[in-house]
Length: 332
Image (tube, rainbow, N blue to C red; front, side):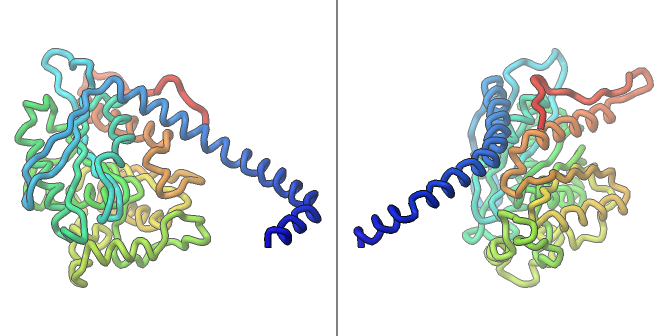
């Protein structure tokens, strides 16, 4: 067998070398720009982590302790000034993921937005299926409201955010807060969220070259929503909700190469029809998994929040708000 392989290599050596050179060139051309973007994003995030006080602890939840990670800017706020609070929920299809998965966006928002970020590690299926995760999200939000003075945060500028399954929890939390007469939220940021257990609007993974497939989504929903009727519950299926009026302004980010893109944009249109101020951004050439650490997205989130907070604080004497520009800027 070894002699046969050697003979084939010797016979077709020139052809094999030509193919090796060709594919090496193609790989360099395709991977190098991607690596450059990842390195740039990592540099911004590493810069952010050095200027933050990061702590891990637990808060009480309905089914036990909830792990959280708090990000606070090291630079003290001005005397008498409170910071905005952003609650962030990681992805993982309701069945996996951890606080570490949210570290990049949480650090970036805390540093460049000068906000306090509370990253929440909610209950995961199948050990703890629906409604454990949204109830954990609501419990963490309630804890943050009770400890606002300790956190030195302004509850009038309280925001929920998340990606993937965390985006679904963020959307559900806006509904729960409204329905349970909780503290009104200032905004919601949904990054490639999972919003529709029926998956009727799911895109074609092959055509989109998506890193997320219908089979993966179906497996996640089977574990998260083991009972069929749960798939119609508004806190499990935000896309099915018809009563969206009164929800906080939304920023919804989608990836072009993501099967979840159509349902997220459908939810955005539903919010707009309900009178909810909504900004939608689709990022070309980006996959589902890459979106949450995509530097242009993180910049846009910071600008969205700054615009939103400026509109809350604007009065007759205030000047027009100019979008925040990050330095050094990185062309894409």
